[in-house]
Image (cartoon, rainbow, N blue to C red):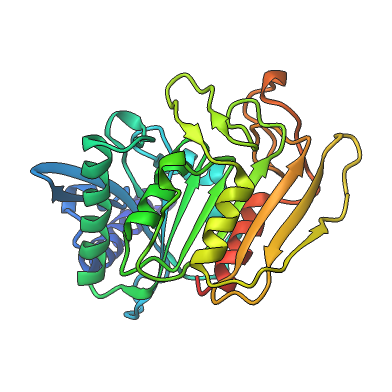
Amino acid sequence: MGTSRLKRFPIKRAALSAVFLAFAASFLGIPATAQAAPRLTIESGGASRHATVVLRDRLKLRRRPLIIVLNRGGSFGVRGRHSRGLEDAAASSKPIFVYPDAVSGAWPVKPGPDADRDLKFLRDLVQHLVAQGQVDTRRIFIVGYHADGAFAYRAACAGVGQPLAGLATLISAMPDDLTNCAPPAPLAYISVSGQADPLIPYAGGPTTMQDASFTALPAETALGIFAKIGNCGAKREEKPIPEHDKREHTRAFIQAYAGCKTPVELIRVEGGGHRIPGRRPDLQDEALGGENYDFDARRAVWEFLKGAGA
């Protein structure tokens, strides 16, 4: 008798989970075949494009912030989501996270037909989610990691969103063809950059990534561009992040403009390499430069976005 109960319980539990997922996914228009993995498929530019959608508290019908996360690797998947940690930092909040899939696993870093195709996809994706009644159009944000942060800059300047409320990039840079960036409205901006990054130069210039070559603007030039977009004053302040780990010869500093319509910040990691601060690297590769554990960049970005409405 005990054995039969043990066999029946997982079946009931699985059935209830399936019903819950089906009910929740219907609000986003997620195809029935993709509900278990919260996958979304839409048509854009004559092709099927895909994204992973994470909607917490699905049964509550209300519009909420949308955070678009760009990271290479094709289908983002659960492992990729949690390795970036933004969702974990936002555990007590209820934004919608969407992880669009890039064609061939990488977002284009240069202007051209591929970039135009993917900008259209992001616009179509945002419009689809807004049409489902879930997204607050005043609180749409985009986050880009590493080389894919270059495309996040492109998306912000092109006005993906209705319009975008904020942009965050981690260990990335703004492409030099975007010096005349003019989004339709001011937006919050934060960037985390390693001053000694061997792949994406903090001071600007050609990147040395094999599969994502572009010319980067200096990190502080990009900061100034977004300060102008955010109608900031001329005053820029810098303060150090308290040092907690003296094993690494790196220090982090926050640069922020005053009097902005939207907040504008740059976290500069002196001696920092091509690594996300606060995150133990997947690869112990000394060629990527110095590490910093004085702060958790993912949490810092989330707190900034939360303060901007996320």
